Image 1 (cartoon, one colour):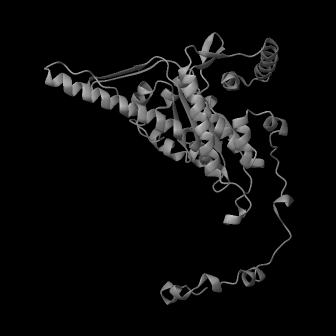
Image 2 (spheres, one colour):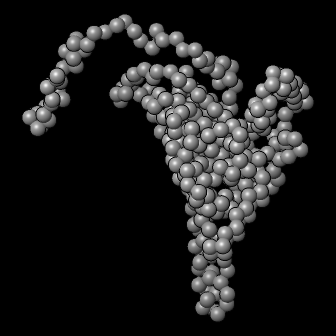
Image 3 (spheres, helix red, strand yellow):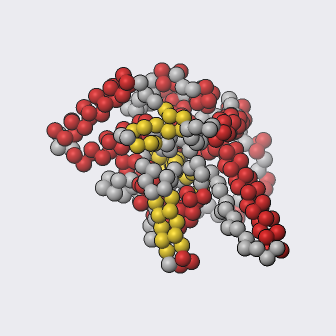
Length: 356
């Protein structure tokens, strides 16, 4: 039996980092001549053509990265940007669709999916702008009501606070209010999926039905006797960007039958994450600075779209629609003849996601 370590006997205060000889430590470790190039992953990365043809904003964000990191940056950025395009729509099956997407990145712990968290910086300037403008509007309303009260008149109802980002651990009642107050859509951004999954375990916190309806911009409503609450939103808009391990995601997406499963874009990988140089010298770019600067550009675009007097319709060419219909028809027909009808909702919602 190995001797137990008594930490009280260790005089840690006398240890000087300058006295640590990492070369001696390395000599004691039996090395094999392996590196990340020796590991062959079965996963294939996106073609280089995808990245070379990106809009400049996305190209600037993805160029500093390679492999898995680059793809996570691309997808998470697209997911965030989908909440930042007011007055832009497309027509799909005779209905208007906004750009809002649901993205789920699934991978083992400490596998590199943390790159997704950088994308949140893209929307923070917009979140701050929306929040400040809303606070100013509320303050003006409060000041006006003070004057009305002095004159003995009935005060007006002031608007609630509007934001752009909401956390995943929000109650179902509160998310109705957030969506109601949002003029141009919201983003739920969670780098740990269990923040969302935990809410789904509570009757008062589960809002799976809201997510399913909001995906298609279907009207949502709630009526409660407490506080005589009635909330109705005719055209809800919501984007989701979530990352987690398979165990974290399972409570959130329990089955394909409730329809939430088919509404997500999934990016899954299961491969080891090799060690990288984490020293200051090993950081080739300042990721925070890169995403913050791009966030400022996105805020400028957001303001321009808000100022448009008319909405902008995103259109595909006739040849693009023909190619799309042929491809999706072949998938659908294959599932029917192979007796995989359970997969049909997934394929059909992938068509919606395609245009979004």
